[in-house]
Structures are given as C-alpha cells and as structure tokens.
Amino acid sequence: MINGMTRSKRKITITIDAAVLEQVKEGVTAGQSSSVSAFIEHAVVAQLAADTDFDPIVAELLAASGGKPTKKELSEARRLLSGTAV
Image (cartoon, rainbow, N blue to C red; front, side):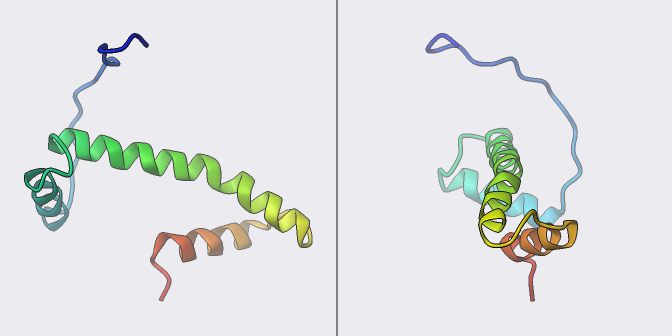
C-alpha cells in the first residue's frame, strides 16, 4: 500500500451492548481512537491477531512439554487468557 492511501472500507451494522458502546465512546472522547469505527476496527484486528497467533504458540510449547494440545487444553487456555476464568 502506498503511504497516505487507505484500504477499502465497508460499512456494516452491528449490535453491541449499550454499556460497551458507552465505554467505546468514552475512549474516543478521551482520544484513545479517532472514531467509534476506528476503535471497533482496532479491537477486531487485535482479536484476529490473537486468534491467528495463539494456536501455534501453544502447540509449540506443549509439544516441547509432552505433545500436541487436545481441544480441551486449547479451550481451557483460551478461557484462562481471555480473562473469563473465575
């Protein structure tokens, strides 16, 4: 991509929890992002990167310590790293 040029964007409609949207808007107001769309796009890109990179890292670490991870092990690792573990 040439400097100064932007990638093609597509307009979409999403449904989001009202409290989450308020936090996003507060982030935009605080200057964390230039717009709600930019904030959401950044979050999606970060999630895609995490999803893409996570499995090979876990597989490499577990292979070094005993073999390929099971689906249950991957699920548990995702749960722990996502912050939803209690």
